[in-house]
Image 1: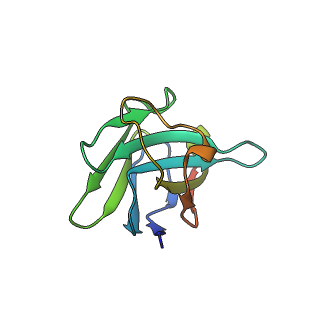
Image 2 (image 1 turned 120 degrees about the vertical axis):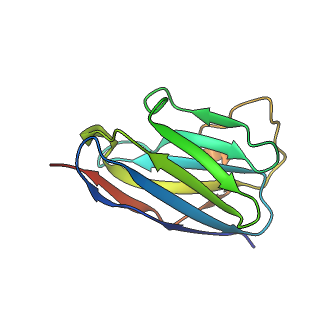
Length: 125
C-alpha cells in the first residue's frame, strides 16, 4: 500500500522560498508535484524518477522550482524559489506505480496512482 505524506507549505512573501517534502511508502517509480488554485484545474508542476532522477518541469516554474529526491529516505522535495502570487495553490505530491517509460513525461493527474493530502502555499505580501 502506497502512502504519501506531505509537509512544508505556508505563507511566504513574493520573492521568497519554500520547500515541500513528500515522504513515500510502498513501491513507486515516479513522483510528481501538482497544484490546484481555487476555481482552476489541477496542473502539473514537476516530476522525478526514483531510479535515474530524470526531471521534468512545467514551463511556468522552470528556473524557479527544483524537484529532487532522497532515495534512502524515500522522500521527494520541491524547492520553490522566487515565488509569485500566481504560485498560490494547494500543492499535491503524487506517485506512479504502473509501468513507467522513462523517456516520456507523465504530466496529467490520470498518469498517477496515489496522492498526498495536499499542502497550502500562499504567496502574498
